[in-house]
Structure formats: C-alpha cells, structure tokens
Image 1: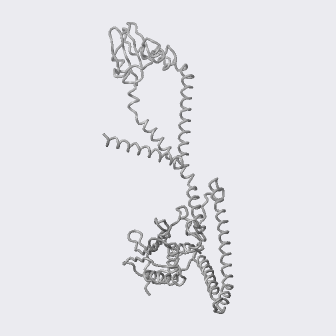
Image 2 (image 1 turned 120 degrees about the vertical axis):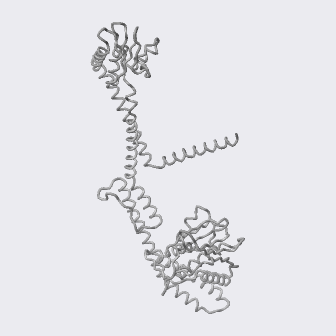
Image 3 (image 1 turned 90 degrees about the vertical axis):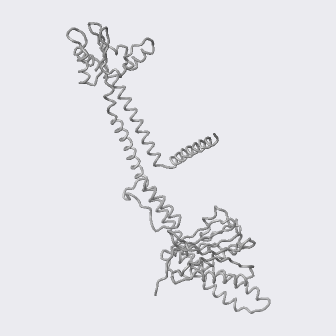
Length: 480
C-alpha cells in the first residue's frame, strides 16, 4: 500500500509540476496569451451570435411557420389514413422511407411505431404534474405545441409525427469538420501572431549582442520605410546601440592617446631614476621608484595590447607552439620573479595531456595568457591549502580542442561577480584586497587572447578557489 501511495503521490506531483510549468509558460509568453485571447473572443462572439440568432428565430419565425407546419402535418395524416378512416401502417412506412420522419400509431386496433427504438421527445410526453408542463413550455414555447404534430382519426387512433434522429446521427462528419476548422483556425491564428511578434526575437538577439559589446550587426527593421510599433522599438534600440558604441570608441581612443603620451615621460623618468647615485640612502628609494615605473609601463602595455586585441581585425602571428614547453617556461619565469620580489613560495602543479601536440598559435599572446592566469592564481593562493594547478588537456569528441585550466585554492569570489571578472578594470574588492589584486586587466586580456584565437573563456568557483578555463580550437601548424 505504501508503494502505491508513493506512486500516486509522485504522479500527482508530476501533474502539478506540468500545470505549473504550463501556467508559467503562458504567463511569460505574449504569443500564447494573444492566441488565448483570440480564441476566447471568437468563442464569445460565436456564442452571442448563435444565441441571438436562435432567440430571434424562435420569437419571430415560430409563429410564421406554425400554420405552414400544421398544414403539412394535415397532409401527412391524410396520406396515412386509409379510405375507411383507419390508419395504414404500409402508407406510414412509405412516408418514413421517403422523408426523415417518424410515425407512431396508437389506438384501439393498431399499436405501431416506425422507429420503436426512438422515444418521444420530452415536449410530446403527456405526463401529469408541473414538470411535464414545464417541459412542454420549455421545448415548444407554449402549451398547445403538441397539436401541431399530433392528429386523431375518426376511429379513435392517434398519429404522432416526429423527426428521425438517426438521420442526423449518421452524419458525424459535420462535427469533425467543425472541430477541424476550429483547430485550423487556432493554428492560423498562432502562426499569424508568431509572425507578427517575430521582430521581438530579433530585438532580443540584438540587445544581447549589444550587451556583449558586438555592435557590428544592427537589429533588422521590417518595413523600415513605414515601421510599426515593433519596428520603431528596433530603430530606437539601434540608435541607442550606435550611441553606446560611439561612447565606447571615444573612451577607447582616449585611453590609447593617454597611453601613447605617457610612454615618453615614463621612459625619461626611468632613465633619470637609473642615473641616480647608488648610495645606501638613495638605493631603496631608487628601487621602489623603478618598481612603480615598471608597473606603470606594464599597465600601459596592457592597455595598448587590449586595444589591439579588441579591434575587429586582431592580427595574430601564428607559429608552431609547444604549449607544454611554453607553460614550463612561464612557471619558471614567475618563480624567479616572485623570489626576486620576496613574495614567498610560487609552487605550481603542472599537468599536461601526453597526447598534446604542437599547435599553430600566437606564442607571444599565449605567453601573456598563461602569465596572467598563473599570476592571478599565485596572488590569491597566499595561505591556501594547495598550490595553484595548471591543467592542459586535449578535448576529444565533437568539439575537438585544447583546454587550459588554471585553478587556485584561495577564497574565491561571490557568484554574482563571476560574470564581471573578465571586464576591463573590474575588481571584486569584497573578495580580494587591493594588495593582492591588480588593476583589473589581467583576465580581460586573457579573454581577448582566447577570443582572438577563436576560443572561449569561462570562470567558475571551484570551491575552494577560482577556476579559469580557456578552450582553443585545434589548428595544426602549416608546413613550410
């Protein structure tokens, strides 16, 4: 019993989940809501029209058709009655075979029905009580409606005429046609609404492109010479995208101009600093000033490199590159630099797929990517339980490529800040302090290098620590 109860409860939860999903989908879909409104409006209009037509016919045409119907029934009764005044079942049967009618004969001699399986309608049943009178008045509209279809003969027989319901039951195709027409109308309405609201999909895709910083393709405007409301919305968003693009280009041009202009003063300041006397009093200040100048020069170089990579035509100098050897060189370089600056241990766990082959890559940019990723991991691994890890794997299957993953075991960052880590000059100050963090260009440059090679860049919390994964497509070096 418990298993059956659990199964029933599970089925009930699935049904509730299905209803909940359908209701949520309906509440978030303008297309479906418009189709539902269209169907409700069509059903309401049909009901009002049919009800009004029936009411008008029952009120206006019933009295006009009563004399004609009574005269017609008189002729039918005359055909059924024989010359001697006794009803003839043969003649009644001939009438029912010729016309969609039923005939019932009751009396002292004859009890016969052309369709005994069909019962008399409610408004012809003469039963005592208020209920029978209510049925007669409801179906016929008045109390003498029976006189139209009932006739009495001279010998005491009663003729009851009616409609043969089997004739109508033999034609169920009408209902099928009506249902098919309704479904077809619903499908046509949905397709039309879908076509009418199709620009919303283009507007959504365009807004997502603008959000990613891709302003190369504008949102298409249907009937641009005379746009509708959605076309006007698309035009407005395109204008907004052009304005944002111009502001970003102006900001980029300003950064480039400042970077170029600062290079010469920094070079002169570094030269003047190196010319200072190497005395016990001046040397510490001289070394500190040289470090600051080197940091400023590095920032300017990163700015210029980010602008070169962010352009539409990022030029790569592809050469045969051994990623395993390049990663080992970068690890040794960082270890030497950290030891020289007195920043502590710089152990890095390096794991390389043995099937990794030589690839066609931009060696300088890949060195920059590995250095920035490892430097970022080392700066946030102080006091961590494990040293940073660098894993280079060959991705097999449908999407073949090379995966480069750098993970630290530090504090990580909040989840809501993950999508912003690769933005220029973004620093999650709440998670990583200014002492350990840079200016916010390292991961941005790594993302640009990955995209310039046609790859992807992803950041996730590894719990503990942060993991950055760069996937590059496989491109074998060209033979000379």
